[in-house]
Length: 91
Image 1 (cartoon, rainbow, N blue to C red):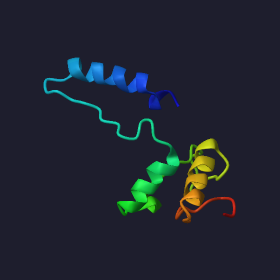
Image 2: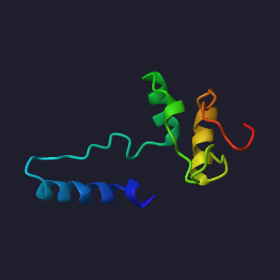
Image 3: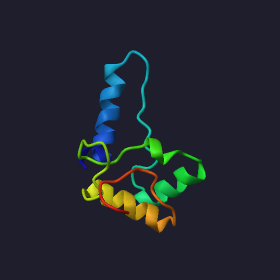
Image 4: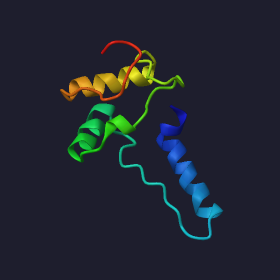
């Protein structure tokens, strides 16, 4: 996605330096990480993924079909855990 690219983050950091009276830095420790390792770290930190949202289809339940849902579900599967979000399709 365009806003997940290093070029975007570097450009936003440049803007933040001149657009604020106090220095602001955008820190992106997971910019080059994959969803599998990012999820693994989040699970180790005890994050509640039931309070997160990845789906791009604005529905009550996640669709489970869009690219973002597919990547999320794959990351949970490869981390040997179940995604706590309700999905429109059976998981």
